[in-house]
Length: 109
Image (cartoon, rainbow, N blue to C red; front, side, top):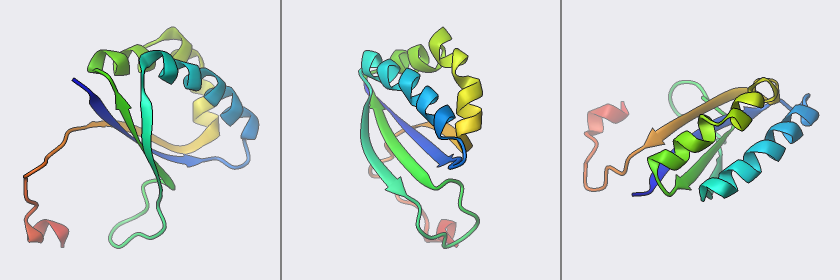
């Protein structure tokens, strides 16, 4: 069963080499895991609260095991210092489809 991952990131513009190092490792890892970036969003405006990140990625993995293969791999662990330099904000979550579930209007206030 496929798994949806939401990555909320803000790139540290002052560290392009760290970003290049991070992407050189994670790109092939995602490919081997069969992950696909489905959508990329730029956060333009905050209506309530604070901006959690500048960019949001929706990534589909073929399974939970594929997610764990990427983030639990020694390759990924080796690039964590570059990740922490390349991004000022980096949060990754697993999301589930709540299709049909209605959000109460009060939750939007």
